[in-house]
Image (cartoon, rainbow, N blue to C red):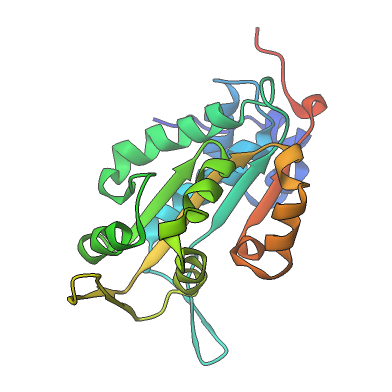
Length: 219
């Protein structure tokens, strides 16, 4: 059970106090804030990620002649250790496993395996405590076309076809991919990452930096 929010906490983070008071986001922030020293904005990001993972394609906005779905790609950025990026993500995963356990995808996959998984469960979530692990998977020789696939999935097309190596075919109906991740500033500012940001799938992410000064002290 997520407790009622305390005004003192929300006032410190006025964006949350102004419009999120009493909502799931505010209640989740307070619940997670009491459990680890991570910046509250990390917890808020995970709360939005939870909502994104839970609603899948059940809600949308009419936009530019189509539908805009709330599938968020989020990455918490900060130094390792005190900022507790992984702990923040783990708290969200705990809630997601309890509420919608079937939507968590395995984190190691080939393109064909991901298609096969999404054919059975077309709407799901990938969680990477270290973003470089996902980048490493997508950069493998046999993962050619994976970044283009991710970019296509971000737009939530009505279906995605795939021809398997054995000559068969796979069709994913109503796909929706949500991604939560964490990363260091060092990785984020590397030349390779900046190159992908300029025109690749990384441009679809919401990047959330934080500083140690934003952490709370656990008593």
